[in-house]
Image (cartoon, rainbow, N blue to C red; front, side, top):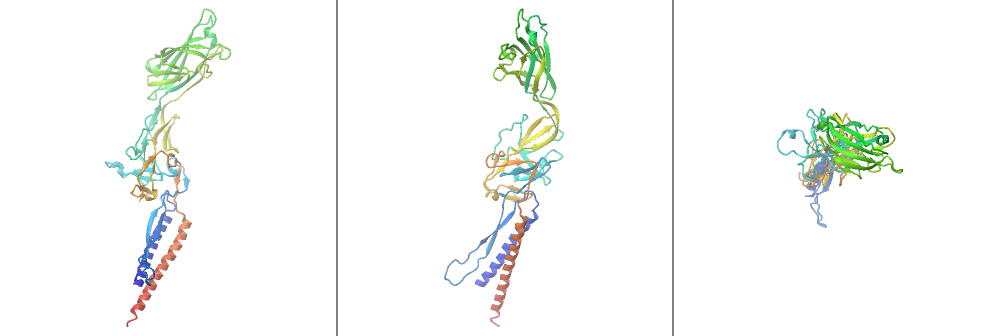
Length: 434
């Protein structure tokens, strides 16, 4: 009967608008929640009678379906914490629950678009709600190994020990020294000129390269030739390289290297101007200058002086700061000025973000509707950049939600009026027989 269907339709309208009211109230309640994705209720009509000209119509009513608009991005809000993280664009951060760290077996992989991460007593990076940040650990030299992109097998909780120390061994050194041209002339003393240059070993210890420059004094004229001997203090002052240096005395290139002859030790690269030395901790590249280069070893005037000696590496330092860059690399900074990459945070992307399963604390999990996930380097593929010192705000527009609230209230009242009217009509029907 049409009147009965009208009653059912009114009840369905009340239920649908109640569902819509629930999404609006949830959105307004989370208008200040970082990373919140607003919910939306859509109405779908139900049709019972589709034939025309029958003279009868039965109301099918309405059905409400809800969805979470995960693809919508909230505004980025600046903060003062270096490990407040947001995503500028597509992609999500991999996280897991704090409880799962103490359990055996696979840990559940969840994802979130933003988080305020701090270290706990064990150095684990997590939010106040117990979400632990996952990442790929770097090698000791700061490089990131190759990990699988379609599984979380390589992801581990990010652990930062605030009391950790680290040393950076010296692997490259630039040696800029001027040798006195007068020492290779007839009648010079022929005394060796010493030079000690500090470098840092693999354990952060301070070592030295003890270098002597001995001039070749000719019987007549000027030889422009020196013998350079390099000793390593970490190897009981053993000789690790001996080279014969000849300098140019022409007008155009006077004072620059003309040739380098290896007596013992590592080879000389004439193009790059480098010597391949082997110190106690491993290989070291010593740059003395290419042939004709004025920035390396020179022989000018009558003074012996270092002109530019630089090196990489540092002594053991204490951790002072940890930051994340736009590529998702977490870098530790030490009080010696040494920086080291310790983790990479990949970004998760799925074909249909709106199909993700919604969990507490603004987290999501992969579902059948979302499709399989893939781990991208931040900024590659469809993903955006990682932003430190920032949080993503809620996607709720309070003004729009209040407007929808008024519309929902009116719609609910109208459906209630339909039920009231049907009730009155049914009462009239029952009053026919008295």
